[in-house]
Image (tube, rainbow, N blue to C red; front, side):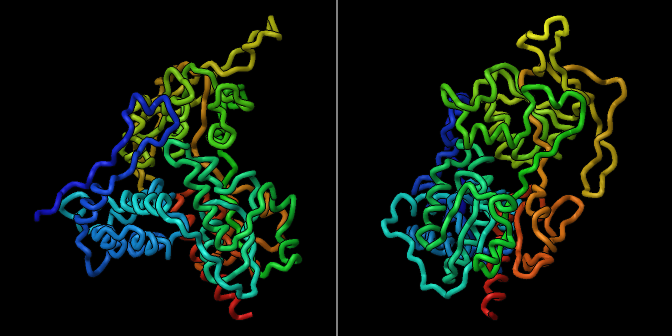
Length: 469
């Protein structure tokens, strides 16, 4: 039977329907679609897709199990290397990782590896009756700072080896960026909660509302008997443009905007922490976070949402799928444009005017692309005299984040780079013995799967370190 040259489409909600609700956009493969997609896998001997996976999942083997209808067996194969399969199947950029290495992709469309991973994980979560079993203790204790992707992965790998693992999370829910950053319509919070519950079944302790650096320090963790510490505190410090008007009311960092919606439920009818009420919204930036903020604003009732990005569509760093979904939903892309000032309302004759201090718009300048910069992307250059104004009731700045300096400032002997990222070696070891780090706390804002890969590497290094004690 001839192989289908194209991957099976992912069923989704209709664009005009989903643009006004927070239900998951992608509906997932049916059993029939999963079987058909798995049949496209060539089961290559050299397994190039595995090399493209940051956590080295045995992709051909799990897909062969799907092909034979052994969905639970497929899940167990994935679970050997990934503590968050239902998450990865939804938010990983497979198109630039495992799928980019797929042999089928040389002549045709690559196998839908991420879609199959999601199907397998969802099948397990819906049908598995048995809980995970905690292994026998090996007598060692490890502390994890942060319950985001890197921390959860490190905790899961160590717990499977018998370590007594405690996670200390600053927020009131575990998940890190998975719960405060990624919207419900891309990653339902119940999925994250299920993955966290599995870690608890493995014996992992979770303490929320604990800010390492304030509530406790890393020194105090060692004093409490922990023999190693993994720092996976993420990059929660938002970057701004440093242009006039960023202090106007109605101007948000993407972190605050998404946290208010995802974690604090500002989308409810009478929210305790409202963000916006209709009007025009401008989101500055071109990454996945910008797409998330723009699509969230639409679902919160915005009349018009624009993305302002200083390069062209070709340089847009967001996943193609997220960009396509945003376009389908009616998001306006204002490309080759850059903000120079945020405008606001001020009525000096009436200081009590309720409109005083609120954003009213943005002045932007048109750009053109010059020669490539050090990263290979064509450098944006301003076009003199091309400035004009856009109306806005809300502005969201989504141009990246940096690691919070709290842990660095409260931990002796911890080296950081000029961007505030913790300096580590190839095993995730910091400049201080027994302290490891990974994910966005090291690299700055990056992908979920790269953070997981760092957590996995550190877990192996911690195991080797403590096994010698």
